[in-house]
Length: 149
Image 1: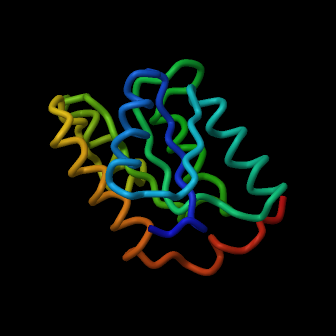
Image 2 (image 1 turned 60 degrees about the vertical axis):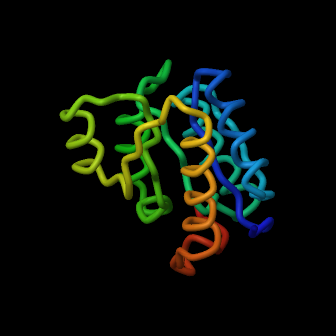
């Protein structure tokens, strides 16, 4: 996989975060994965890391039910800022609520995936997520260049 591209996983459930990391490893995804455990940490990490290092992750995997700032508010803030407006965001949640699905897309999510309960299904999703967003998807050059504050 593309080790030079990173992933931001925004997940407050440490078991789910570990499961996701394990699924990535088992799928051969060796890209760096940063885990933010709440919405405020995700926003802070994206903007401070991006400003400090000049590189956004290739994709944000965003849970909806988060402390401090929920996933919808994180998505609102990312889409409101020119520097992160085009950043790919995949909602990765256990929510089966139709209003969550609609709201996620309305706010600019690129994709909405429900976390499967069965590990082998999760492994398959992790493999396909990694291959799509890290290998096949094309990012605008503006997302791979240093950000200006």
